[in-house]
Image: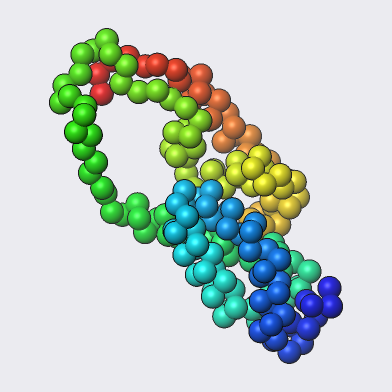
Length: 175
């Protein structure tokens, strides 16, 4: 707690660096869970740290530094994903025939694909709860939402994932 008070009294750069060093691994994992690419995750963390340093004066309660910087990383990752969503990439599989026989398997549904289909906010809830093990209260603080709202959003997201997985397995037909 002394480091936090030093940080806020003097705006000490070394104190900020020490706090970031303690959190860097967790921040990277969160960014990676969104970006699914090492370089992109590192870019997100770097941007978030710069933004955090610039807006450090806005943090009123030093004890919430971890929550605050985590939220900055999440917002930075979501913003980056939104920017990329505006660009559409066309990927052609050279090994795949142009037309498919209607009885051939065209798609295997797995958890990774289901997570990719979720909105970033929904994916965030699942990652925070089941990958990082945050409690509902911690999630509510990080997201800046009431605990009941977080619970209901998580419940709806889990129901959506369950429904998608129930439809999973091999699916046959035309694309």
